Length: 286
Ligand code: ADP
Ligand code: MG
Image (cartoon, rainbow, N blue to C red; front, side, top):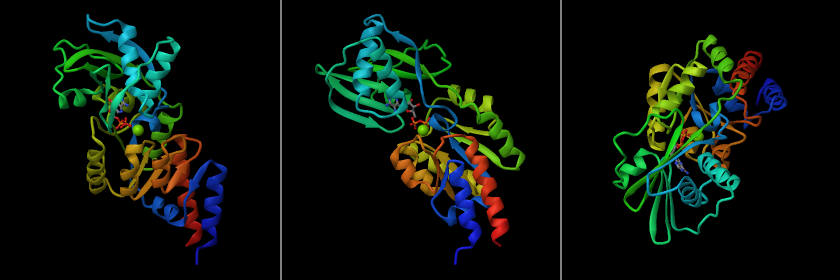
C-alpha cells in the first residue's frame, strides 16, 4: 500500500505548480546527488531576440533574415521562433520552401527557388562543407550561420535571458551538497556565460542529443544519482534515462510526456521545492 504521506507530498507539490506523476518519483528524488540541467528553456527563458544580422557582401540584412526565417518556418525550436518574430516585425515577405529537413541539435535545410539554404550551427556548416570565414568575430550570443548552395552567406546572432530565480536556486542546491551541471547543444561562449552567471559547477557545450545521454551517465557515475531537468523535444531520451526526469511546463509535449515530474510554473526554483517535498514526504512516510 502507498503510505498516506505520499498523497500529501503530491498534494503539496500541486499547490506549488509541481506535478509528480506518482509516488516513485517522490521517493527517487530523495536519493538524488546530482542536478543536470539543459540551458535553453530551462535556465534561460528560451525567448531569444535577434541582436545582429551579418550578411556577406552579396546580400542585404533583410534578404538574409528573410531567407533564414523562411527556412525556420518548419521548426518549433525557440531559435526558429525568434527569427520568424524578427522577420514579422520587419514586415519581410517569407518564401515558400521545399525539401525541408530539420537536424536536431544542428539546424534546418531547405530549398528556395532551386537554391539549397542551410541555417544552423558550425556543425551543420561542416556537415555540408560550407567553409566559414577565418576572421569570424567572437559573439556573445548564439550564432546561426546561413549557407546558400555551398557558400557562406552570413550569420544572425540571437540572445536569450537567464531566468530570475536561476542563480539563487543553484546556490540553494549547492547548499544541500548537490553537484550541479549543465548540458547544452549551444556553443561554449553562451554556455559558459550562463553557467558563470548562475554558478553552475560543470559545463558541457556543443553536445548532440545522443552525447547528452552519454554525459549524463558519466556524471551519474562520478557524482551519484541524477535529476535531469530539460524542456526540449531532444531532451525526451535523457529525461527517460535519468534517475528522475523533470520537464518545464513551457516545454515540448514529448519532454512533458517523458518526465517523472513536471514544473508547471516553469520556475527553476521548483527544482529546490521538489527536493524538499520529497525529503519531507519520505521522512514522514517511513
Ligand atoms: P539546447 O541544448 O541549448 O537546448 P539544442 O540541442 O536544441 O540546444 O540545439 C543546439 C544547437 O543547435 C543550437 O544552439 C543551434 O546552434 C542549433 N539549432 C538547433 N535547432 C536549430 C534551428 N531550428 N535553427 C538554427 N539552429 C538550430
Ligand atoms: Mg533545450
